[in-house]
Amino acid sequence: MPTDRAYRVLVLLRRLAVAFGLVLAVGIATPSQAYEAPGPRWPGTTIRYFETLPKSYDWSLKKATQAWNRSGAKVKFRKVKSRSKAQVVVRFGDTHGYGGYASIGRQRGAYVHLVRGKLRVEDRAYTGRLIAHEFGHVVGLDHARPGGCKLMEAGWPTDCREPAQQGLYNCRWLAKDDIRGAVKLYGGRVRLSKLFCPQEQKPPQLQDVRFSGGDTVDSPLTVSWTAPKGVRTGSQVEIGVYEASVCHGGTSDNRYGGAVVPVGAQRWVDDSYVAQENGTYCYEVRIVNRWGLGASPIRQQVTRAAVPPAPPVIGGIVEYPDDYYDYSVEVTLPGNASLHVDAAQQCTTSYDPSRWSMAEPLQDGRWGLYDVPIGPACLTFYAVDGDGLASAPVTRQVVHSPRP
Ligand SMILES: [Zn+2]
Image (cartoon, rainbow, N blue to C red):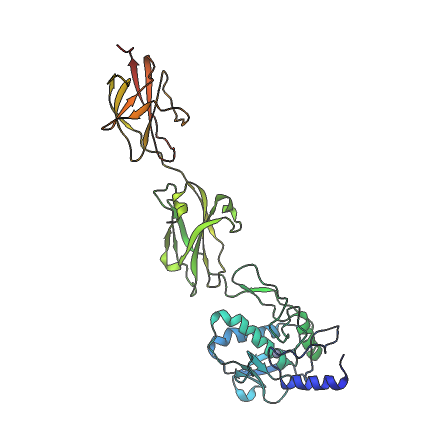
């Protein structure tokens, strides 16, 4: 503890300079508490304020007022429409280089000053907390020792927990210590608010969500939806493509791709590389507000199977076309497929890449066959694409005679 004289000087200094961001509280608070509640308190339990801030500040001002009014301390802020009935005026004004500046406790001409400017919507929670801090001064509190995410810390509060989920913010602006300071002056009991609040309520769920296609690489998956009523500005539709195992709701660790599109687009076609890959995937679609907070996703598992090539068309077969081949055969193959031929006593029923093809390409769409067994034999033809996927078999029975 400093000497009584030093303490008085410090208190005086702090009453003169109640700047947000000015650290003067260090070393004066007793160990049992961090708050500084010099007062003087206002009479009664209501502090009436008048404000001249632009409409863009309404949300912040309302949240700052609620933070105090629901704190459990027996002090409430009430907005009045006439300056003459107000005890405090909230307006743009001199902030001595800080974000905000306020008088401490009950006094004539009590005020909260904020830096003049246009408030961006993404800054409204920050500004709300700043106003709540200045209201703390008006209540009669001075800067508290930093730590523990306290509203009345001189700088921006420290040790604050941040939400893991997008679109939420830490809305417990008043820590236990802040409220204790107010309770000391006004009575009441500490009531902590919940820790996290949405920046804006969750958007309504998308309607008529439909998934179509996506089962082959030639038919890309398409998601369509109807925009729900009451969608706020900045809302978007988020589409994610995940590994199949994530289709029951998981983390986004296995996200392959996706897109963010306007709600009004009403459809999305997967043109990502995933659309060209065979396998099983999970498609997820949801609407999110401008803060990224969304309705629960609607999911669809899609299995994309490769399309086997069309079977080869087999034309005329000629035995012993020359000294080298047993047969030559006219073959029409689907685009960029190659021919695989099994020649055996029994027809084969499935393509096996480990078997040797008994065919070689000749000219003009003809193929030469060799090693055809003597006697009745079955020639089995497959068209095989670049990925090794084979068509259904086409067979021809022949009776191969010994070479004359
Ligand atoms: Zn301050």
